[in-house]
Amino acid sequence: LFLRREMLLQLGAYHTLNLQLKRKFTVYKCKWDVVHMERINEACNSSSEADLAAVVMQDGLAHICLITNTMTISRAKITKSIPQKSRYNASQRQMAFKKFFEAVKAALLLNVNFDVVKCVLIASPGFLRDQFFAYLYSEDSSKNEVLLNNKSKFILVQSTTGHKHALKEILNNPAISAKLKDTKAAGETKALEAFHEMLLQDANRAFYGIKHVEHANELLSIKTLLISDALFRSMDFVKRSRYVSLVESVKKQGGEVKIFSSLHLSGEQLAYMGGVAAILRYPIEDLENDDEYIDDSVVEELTKKHDNKNNHS
Image (cartoon, rainbow, N blue to C red):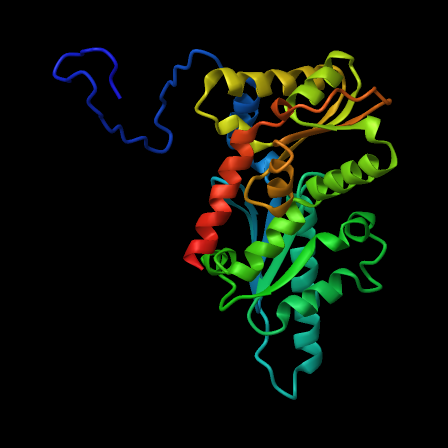
């Protein structure tokens, strides 16, 4: 949208620019806040920030992929010759599969950072995914601490093929999408459970609503900040800056920040508390009750969303 008159373009007119791969461009913005900068850095360093990995395989073929919100990155392709099934070469076929599984396992450990990845999909036709998963945790592989410590991150799913394009059908499956949301948001869900538990045990160490949380931040007492990503999409610049400043301040004080997706159930629950809450390092005497402590716009937005779902259903 043009806010001033340019040559050959009318004031208030829209113009579309096509951005191509490896074509440089510059984006000007009055103020770049820490939340937006982190998201840009994540997009630019996708291989180190990808929190979803996938192994798509069939007999003798496997692809190791990293998946972000913006792209799918192919990290490795493994191919091995597998003899056709017959009663005369059962041992040879079994040995070929063992070598194939070992190569896939090595590529998985080499290309997937389990400190970052929250979920690993293993997809295949038939029962190959079950055989590979069993191999990962067989006696030969059971000594690997990385695999042992991350067993809960694996999800086994059905696919029609072992080629990369099978990822599209897998990720479009509603049942798989729900599982992924729950797995990837496990850290946020655990933080929300810790908040509710603290609220029951010691209410003076669990604050929610913007004014309560800002008051706790002024006293340098926030241990964990829980905040909805919906607040960073507000069209009100002043309101958006207020929440960004809160995030920056908590991080500077050494606090942990958990950003909740408004699309996940845990994010919806947080939105009903105003979209922001905090677990404190030490008790603080509670403030007087006031409706202004909760940002009603976040609650109202979520309520409308649920009303629309119910109307469609």
